[in-house]
Image (cartoon, one colour):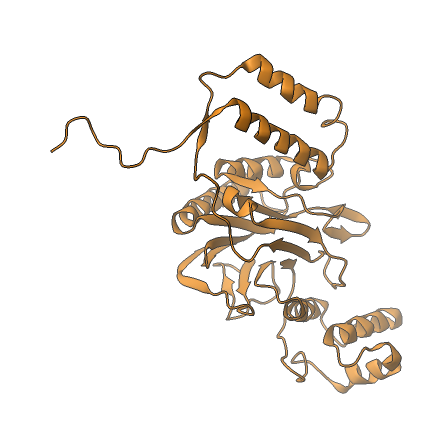
Amino acid sequence: MTDRRADAVGGSGQDPPCSYWNPDWLHISERHEEELPGYNECELYRITLAYNYASKDLTLFDSRKLAQDLMMQYVCESRVDIVVISEPYRQLPYWFNDEGVDASIWVTLINGRYAMSETLVQKTGIVGIRVCDVFCVSGYSSPSTTRHVFDVFLRELDCVLKEGRKSASALMVAGDFNAKTRVWGGNKTEWRGTCLLNVITKCDLLPIRTTGNYSFLRNGRTSFPDILSINRRMRLSWRQSAALDWYSPSDHFYILHMFTSSVKRAVGGAFVYSTKQIDADSFLNKFDAIYTDHVLKIDESACGERLQNSMERTCAEDLRKKFPLRGKRRGNYW
């Protein structure tokens, strides 16, 4: 689950949900007592925020602190394992944080999954940690950075991803990179998106299309800056990614990524296809049959999925798999 600009401290049990709780919150909630389904912190926040915006009284809270309180309550209610947070207002001590103040990973321990602290990798705007069999990377890049600074950031991200591949077989990177491209659902492609996509694909990661038209909304402008990319093994366990319509004071929506409880091992292990004896004409004809009149005219995730599945079936039928050699010895050995 990813979120951005979330901050504050979360409560537990029936204790007040945040450190700046005061009687004004309770007084406001009494006016909407019939709308409250029992004692629900999230519902109380939503009603209070709506009332304060209507009355133009925004002095009772900081919306960025409220955003994190809501996030933490949502996480507890949904029993999320890992939370990727970009550009938090304040990093908490039990998160895994970057060297700056822009990227964090929160391993909730709700379902018994824990992080291996010895695998922690920290850069400015980047943090990586292994959780069970998965190496998780959180990243953030400001939209105002120059191209040179962004290139340096991408080189550091590439180093972190290579380090993560050494410590875990499953790899994922998520965050707000402010990089736009149609590949992960944007309405246009910019140079930042192209450069980030090159780094991701070079590390054998696949960008995931999130259900929904956008994950960011400000002054009527929408975009999809929050992305997720995973490697082939983790792709087998991926089930769904969706931008949620849950209320958040932030300009960014909550994004929920769902995977199976255990990461499946890739069937047959790692392999490459041998193209020495390929029938190029037959292969291209099958490709054109799917590609023509569909892919470029309709930018939908389902269309891309059909094309990818068709190419995988064609490769499996027409090409020979080449597996890595195991236990090979030299011709002359002692």
